[in-house]
Length: 462
Image (tube, helix red, strand yellow):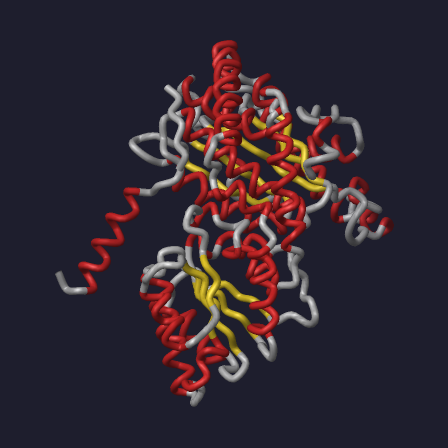
């Protein structure tokens, strides 16, 4: 049932051998499902491998689910009151306000510590993976996990004369963020800067009464409004993610431009061409077939490392309800070939894999020819570091497919602001549609609240 919420074993194939063959140019090129979208969207997603390894029954279920997903997508995009997370990418006033705040807030700053957790931090952290060490911008660090050793060390080592704290909480009542904020303010007072807290703090929270809002009013620090209609895990394209991006010297407009490209394609595409609809349909078909318990995003790029963590929260918190959902697994390549690949190839097998890589062939340092040949490593001689990374990414996808694992591939020319903005929007749409097709509200997280209530009771000695 679709509900609309507006809120046996195959022969072993050696992976290294496969990578050598691909690197030598002898492997069949992967067919990309949506080549006609490459001029609009800065990535290509292909599901052909996943469908080729599926049973006839699963393929039939996919066709049914694809029609349902296409209908749900058009309902989502054409509704009279569209979701704010979809319309915010067309705004410019909030970016202007964020740039003005960033300019004054970062003046004279040595470091900016972002205080927030979950959706208030993961989007910004994912964007921080794009940042080289730029001059002219303060160093931005995210303190999204509460740990007393880490926070004590931060306050001890920071230059409290030049440090800045950006506190982000949608509700303004997040205990972890409030605790960090109050302790940081106390440290500044102890260092003799208590009369100038307005210079050291900035806040992003909803425009309604809350503890964090009251703190900002008390110290007189600048505040940006968290959009009322966007939940934390969907907020990366708002000032929640884009204010940190601006502080890090990234192009916030380009991030939104990539997101708009995905939306434009979603409005124009037929069902078979719609990336988010096809992704949701694939997941739902395998779920209805009883063949899916895990969903794995495997990125062969350090620039997508934290993006995997952002996606993991999005997927888990949006879809894991009432006994529904699949467990999201974020993997990083090539390193996780040496940790998780054995399980992926030879374990239970009820997982859908998305293997993502960028154009790295011919890039990076080169292995000296003579030294490699002397060591019997002719297949590495004269190769760039990026040659091996790309070969291993493609080999991973092929090896998983040969084991009968459903695999789709995500190919990007590069990971820049526009590309990651497109990825944010694609996976948010795919997640929402998957929820609608499985009868799950993708916008709430009722079970999480139980733990918050109990933790507060413990603190109050109840």
